[in-house]
Amino acid sequence: MRTIAIGDIHGGYKALEQLIEKIDIQERDLLIFLGDYIDGWSQSFEVIEFLIALKRKRIENNHTAPIYLRGNHDELFLTYLTTKAQNNMWLQHGGQSTIDSYENRTQADFEKHLEFFQNGLKNYYIDKSNNGFFHAGFHNLKGPEYEYYDNLPYWDRTLWELALCLDPNLSPDNDRYPNRLKLYNEVFIGHTPTSRLGKLEPVNAANVWNIDTAAAYKGPLTAICVETKEVWQSDPVHTFYPNENGRN
Image (cartoon, rainbow, N blue to C red; front, side, top):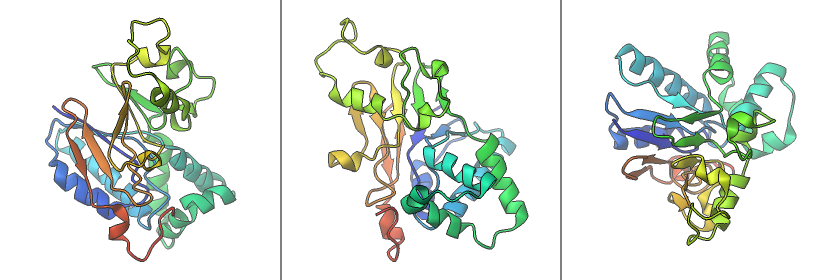
C-alpha cells in the first residue's frame, strides 16, 4: 500500500484528471487530499463532483477510501453556502470563480456538495506511521488536538515558517529543537505555495513537506508518495485554462 498526499487543487479539474492518471492508483493506495479544492480556476464544481464520485467508487469496490482534509478556502465556501454572506476578500481571492462554477446547478447538487463540505472533510489526519497531514499546520506545542481554535490546522502558517527557519544541522535530540517538530515522523502540508521560494516542486524543511506547488497560479498540481517520496505532477494548471487568470 502506498500513502499518497495530493496538494491544493483550486478548481483545476483538468489538472486533477491528468494527475490521477499519472499516479495509476491501486486498490490499496491511500489518497490523502490536503484541502483547498476550490477557488481559483473555473471548475470547482467539477472537482467536488470528482472527489465525491471517487470515494463512492472506491468504497463500492472495497478499495481503500480516500481522506479529504479541510482547507481554509473550503471553510470560506461552506460559510457562503450556509449564510450567503458576502466576504469581499474571499471573492477577490478565488471565491467568485467558485460561485460562478456553481451557477445553474440543481438543488440536489447543492445538497450533495453541502454534505461534502460539512461532513466529508477532516481537519487533519495522523496515519499509522505517525505521519501528520494538515492543510496548513498547527500551533499548539502538544499537537492539533490541543488547539484552542479548531480552524488552526487549515489556517496556521507558523509550522512551515518554523521549519524553514530551523538550522538544518540542529539535531532533534538538542534541547533547542522545536517540540512541534518532534511530535510526528513527517508532516505533509499545503496552503503556502512553494513558488514563494522560487520553486514549483515539493519543498522539504526539517521533517515537513510542503506540496502546494502553486496550482492556483502558474504551477502544477502535485502528489507525493509518503513512503518513497516519488513525485507526480500535472502540467502547469494555467495551461489547461488559457483564457483565465486563476488567482493571479
